[in-house]
Length: 112
Image (cartoon, rainbow, N blue to C red; front, side):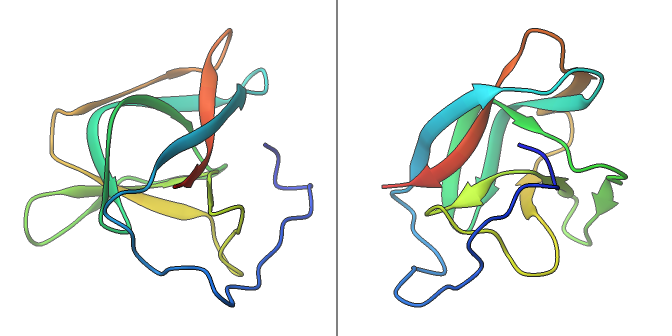
């Protein structure tokens, strides 16, 4: 995924959360980018384990008051992208690893 592509941003009839959603589609990560491997992460009440995500360009690890951390990743939810940013995953400390994207396939869409 690249931020230059056009994605649907209308959320009519798309669930805001879904605890049963899971990675539905993967694609090769673009070269010279950063990915994050998550042992466990949550996104919109869905728990994702043992997966790679493409980090948004200019990402920053956001510390939350409950001790978890948030990362912005280039991933769709039911084939939709939020209007202003990419999706944010929430991870417990130590449950992720940031690395180079070379040769990695990343989650592109989460749905049911």
